[in-house]
Image 1: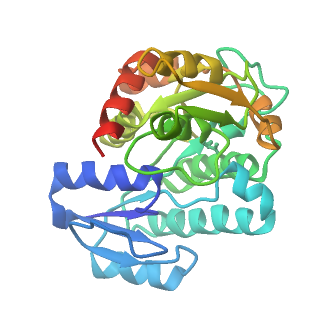
Image 2: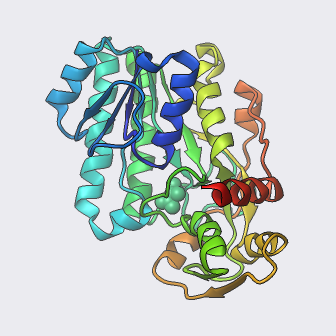
Length: 308
Ligand code: SER
């Protein structure tokens, strides 16, 4: 049995669907802090900070694998630093401890490009490099990576992780991230043919289409344990682009589309993150391969959102 924490979020909603299609509807227990619609299998309302209830759910459903997707993202955590730290860290410890005690066999926990900072090489950022995050979110992800590796090395915990780039999907909206503009822009392009971007022209960030991100997550979790050589978190490169480039791609489909720029506090966060990522370790260790580029992603996003 598989448990997904944060199943109502941007990644969770798509991951649950894929896992249920793969393993069967009843084999995946979805949890979220609030009721989420369209659940086609077991669902529990759970505040992941409620350790007792989380443990009870693990026992009751005889859970073997946990996908821990609960977090405050970069922009939101800057507004509530203490709570961001508490939520991101305490919930990770609960899950790692369940694995340490042998109650569950495998853990997925996402890290992020937010572990990098102003002194990290910005282009083709290597797997092992300077990590000096400036956000509470980034600090929590970096600390989390260190703890994952510690639990793997010292307690034999099978924990696996990816440093997600900005994720772009049509099923649900992201909440409180710095890379969210790249999702919002598609919605606004269709609704009003214009978009005011909260990042400046020329701000390159690594991004990835949700379909690739979900496939990466499942492939990583299915890879034989011996091939997972990195137990902190794997770099994943994805697609690197700036706001004007995604706008130009949208214009090919919607010629009247216009982008304007009104950068806010998120500009500073974006500037502290890499523009592109080197993911050769993921390619070599578990065969990672990207399928969607900016053109293909834009075609798919606009086509699908248009139907909704
Ligand atoms: N997409 C996330 C954010 O912007 C980064 O992991 O916060």
